[in-house]
Length: 168
Image 1 (cartoon, rainbow, N blue to C red):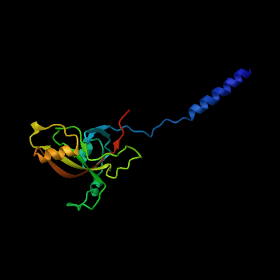
Image 2: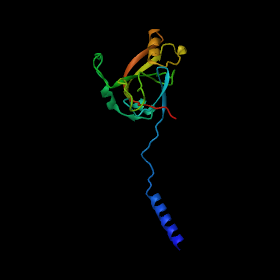
Image 3: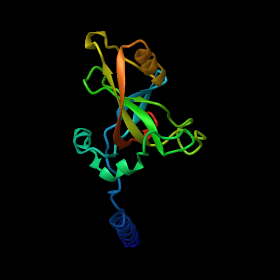
Image 4: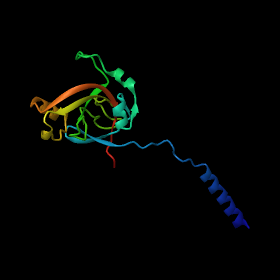
């Protein structure tokens, strides 16, 4: 009799504990994208874009107000903004974007004052598409421009693309 009573109490406590457990619903899945920075692969997510067509292509929020972050040009060198440069390849010669900076190290210990998750998009267009090859750094893009291989065009498109740690 005591055994059945004890088992009943244990079963009641167990079922009671199970009924109070909650299912986590505060998580989302976002596409993890690969980019380049100084010849190294970096990972990032895109959450918001100031251009509707690009937001649709990246499955991100259309956020036209992000464009308010673009300063008047020409911008005096002493004027700082929250925008950093990201280079995209509009004709598909290269699938990965090139980031001008990333936090170092990633996470809360970063001391990198140049990194910002807000990016002003620059389009890199190959003058002769048959000569296109992977450019993996801002320096490589500038070198290709100096050699007359590409043109770089500043846009007013702003993207929110935080750089994140590599998957484990």
